[in-house]
Image (cartoon, rainbow, N blue to C red):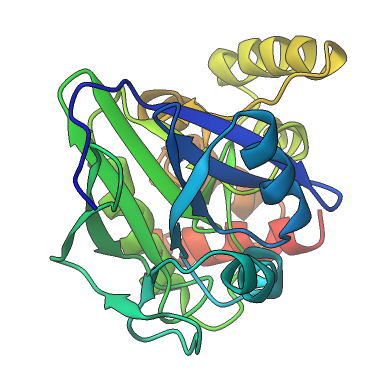
Length: 266
């Protein structure tokens, strides 16, 4: 299917389940679904916007990200792009770091990054068009937080997050869950002296009060307020030592691991 280079692209956030966002990127005619954990919300958005599905993109194998794929494929004969090493049977076009994907039907090229940690084969998709930097990162990086370590190690996840933090500050972060306020409450507890966190809590709370999503964030905002990108800050390590969660003089990776463990029960 030929690309249509003159159509502007838009990103739709489609709420699903209790706190998921399914993403639909479209040009007013064609659309690609990213992490469609449920099919019905995707079908509804396609109908509402008069769009034709041309591809499915997946970041990792968890059910709330791939559960809608069988129903979508039953209705739409489209390729399924996804991680080469995450065990998703539906993937017809496997991807890994270094690959570049020209999305069928759209004027959209995405670079693939390996971002293990949440799952071992997790990938992310990066758009690098000047003036339109986008990141679809599944459950690796959240607004104000990061995903749980279900399969990987702290070293893997911290390296994956460093890879994402190296993207341009204006990169829009399209993560997959509305966890922002809970994450920022943790961030404020971890780094109470960071005024930017308090300002962000106020801004994001106002969005939620109006029924608006807090996503997308930006890489620059995450670097200023997300403890999992800021774990090398002295205040964070000192706070963990004071709580007995970290040994004095511990290495930065131990700080990251202690933060992730604390967040699990916060």
